[in-house]
Length: 269
Image (cartoon, rainbow, N blue to C red):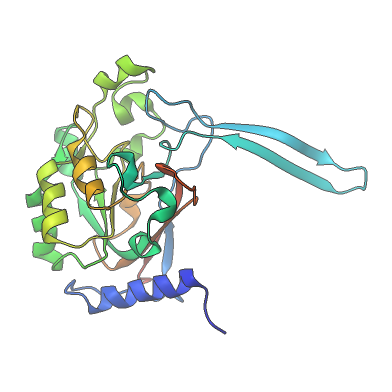
């Protein structure tokens, strides 16, 4: 029987990791430890200060006249809240919408760059080219097609909006009060120009750090059709290398982003 496209894509990603210059062993899907890198959606889910929160409406719940239990709900959410993906169109006109992002960008070898120490000293820290080079100095060149995940340690503050993003205020004026780590524009340029990654993500609300006014990292990455994963969870449970990632969003035609379920497949040993 021919395996479904997702399985074939993930298998190819594992083979790519094994063949890359990264000095690690790709996980076997049969024995891998699966780590959920996703926050659940509920009334506490964190959104950008200008966005509405998540709403779940119960449409039906209880026993039917036929004697069986039945539940069905409706939900409403902004695209950019909770663990979600930014499609390139979010900040780059004419680039990929959510439904146009190739699956090959969303399934691939994982790279975790640990910047927790720097972020503990400075909550507005921006991951630098030096941070990425330090990872390569220990683990080898970032593999082609990699999903690079920046571990700031801020997911430990979820869902406390003040500790996680700097303010619990809402509305346009609250944006100026945001403080959390992100990716430096120079590092974004380096990844676009010197490496061939599939996607990038981190455990904060935005790929640009909180004080950003021009969102350069977004613009640089998205112009090159590199999507971003934001509000990633549980990065402390994955190693620096030797794992694969699958980040599969809702396929919203024309969308600029949307909820995503992210899983890491880690070597069992």
